[in-house]
Each structure stands twice: as C-alpha cells, then as structure tokens.
Length: 432
Ligand SMILES: [Zn+2]
Image (cartoon, rainbow, N blue to C red; front, side, top):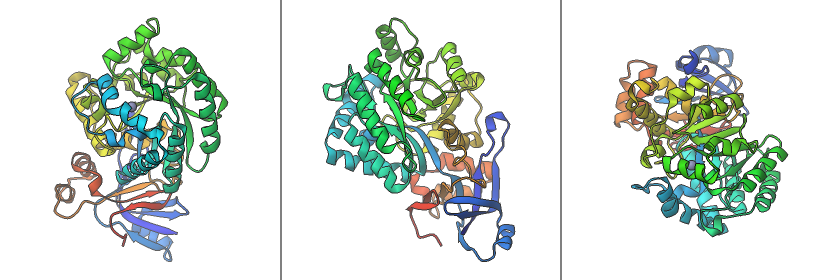
C-alpha cells in the first residue's frame, strides 16, 4: 500500500445543492491496488499505518482526475480553426480531417496523439466521439486500453450531408456498431456508445437503427449533438417537419439516463423538461461555443429544470483538452449572461470538471472525488517555481482562492503527475 500525502481538494457533495469544497491542507490517502482505502489527516493516517510507503506530493494541489464528457477523437489535428461558424467549420476543418482516418496507420497515430492529449491535460475519464470508420474506433479503444484511460466511445454514423466517404447505411451502422461493442463494451474500463453525428446528417431510418443498437447492447451509452447553432437548429426543423431537435432522438428511444447531449445552447423549456424527466445529461462545451460563436450556455435554466450538466472540451472546435480552461470559460459565459447567468465559484468549477462528469457518465461510485472507496484517479497540479500560478498558489488566502487561481492560471504545463486507477500515466518528474 502507498500513502499519498498532499493538499487535496474535491467536491464529494454537489455544490449546486448545498455541498462545499472539501479541502485538506495535509491529507493522507491510503491506496491499495488502485483503490483509496482510507483518507484522513496525514499524521493520523501515518500513525495507523506506520509501515507503508509514503509518497509526498509536496506543494501545489491534488485534485480528482478530470472528466471530459464531450471530445472528438479524430479532431486533434483540427484544433485552432478560427473564424467560422459551426457548419462552415465542419466542412472546411473537421470533415476533411475525419475522412483521413479511413487509413489505419493514420488513425493509429491520431489515436496515440488523442489519448496522450487527454492524459497530459489531467483527463482520466472521457466520453469520446469516435470516428466514422470501425477500424479507427478499434485503434482508439486499443490505445485507451493501453493507458488505462476510462473511455466510453463508439462508431460515429451519418448518412447524408457530410462527405460520401463518411456516409453509411442503417444496416451497416448497426452491424459495425454491434461488432465493435462485442469487442470493447465492458472490456477493462471501456464502454460502448451509440453515436449518430447529429440529426442534420442522420435520416430517420438511421436514427431508428441507432435505437435498435442501443437496445441490443446492454448498458450501452448514447451521445450526440443538440441545439448548438441557430442555423443548424433551423435546418434540422426543416428536415424533420418542424420537430424540436431533441424529439428527433427521443422518438427513437435514444434519450434516457445513459444519454449525453453536447451543447444545448438554445433549448426550449419543453426540451429541458424532457431531458430532466428522462434523467439525461448535457455536456457544456464553453470554449467551443465561444470559438464558433454558437452562443451563451443557459446553465441557470438547466439547473432550474434539474438537468445534469458537466463539462466537455469539444476538441477540435474547443481550444484544447484542458478542463481548467473550460471551467474558466464556463465562468466567463455565466458572467456575460448577467442576471440570467448562474453564479459560479471555483468550487462549482471543480465540481463541473470532476464529480459532475462522473455522475453524468454513471461512474460516481468509482471516480469524481478522492474519498475512501473511489479509485485513485488524480491530478497533481504543481507549477514550476516562479510561474504566475506558483506565486498565486503560495499567496492564496484559502483553499477556494487557491482553486480559483488554479482555474484562472493553470494549464497542462502545470500538471506534474496524473494517475488512473492508481497507476501514474503522466509524470513530469519522478515522484519523491
Ligand atoms: Zn462536438
């Protein structure tokens, strides 16, 4: 067993419903086989377990591993395409790159870059939009399994309005999805998700086949996009005889507790009520929404309806893998909404980046905080001496202030070590 000693911050109880930041300046976490067996003050824990190895994470902050609830595997190399709204960005930046993943070698290289990008940013769990090619999705699952990253992912399907090589048929989508699920669903930390790209690019027969696959793969997840951009929403309404966007999925049985819809920047109250009644979740992707000019996310309305919300990086429309940056941008958006915005503290931001994501993905029993019984998925944020974050942390007034400084100033460059399931999978320096 190992005792990890450090300054540990987490949010075991939802701060949107009265929880507060749990902050232990000198905590001990007793970890055996990847599970946190006990947590307490270091001195007291050490006295109870005098023979165990101690790893002292001196300085900085120890946080739960981040949970990214919306990120695109094939878009690592498409990050940074500025100056376009959604539909132009898709056709000029994202889709040409996604077509290249038909090539197996290319897909394996991108899978390695993608998983590395997540881990370097401190993300230990992710719901991932896969690729349009089954062989590329295999490459992603294989790479994630190699590192131990907890991913839920699957084949992305469409049958219109993209590019010919990205289109499939309802039967092929079902068959390839089922074969992938048989290979990867429930294997290690991997789970399968049914993923129509968005209703704009999926006709009813294809969405119906997605519903069949979701029924036939027990415990599978569903994810897609909804209500991101006003032009997109109008086009969907036109294609589906005026239906609301969420209904295009719901009528095929795709909306339930294991459903995560990305964006939802422009929802109707009916759609929010539907999401809440089904127990479905929304992945809020603030840098993507800003970069594409999609709009300001109505978090307060989601909370008022009781809809689960967590953060997504939405790489590559999002501006990187770092959920600290997404948290800060989420804060900016609510500030810009004025009286309509939710009032967020750094505790809310940590919750959105960790425990809320774990809850959205049904993994709260395993990850999302650093309490006894959870797996040791953790990030040690320890900036180099003399950086602005280092100075700020050393002069923080209290733990919530330190956490605010981490969200405002932190980046992947400030992350020293990342553990998934108790195994270090990124280490800037040997832990001493
Ligand atoms: Zn997306």
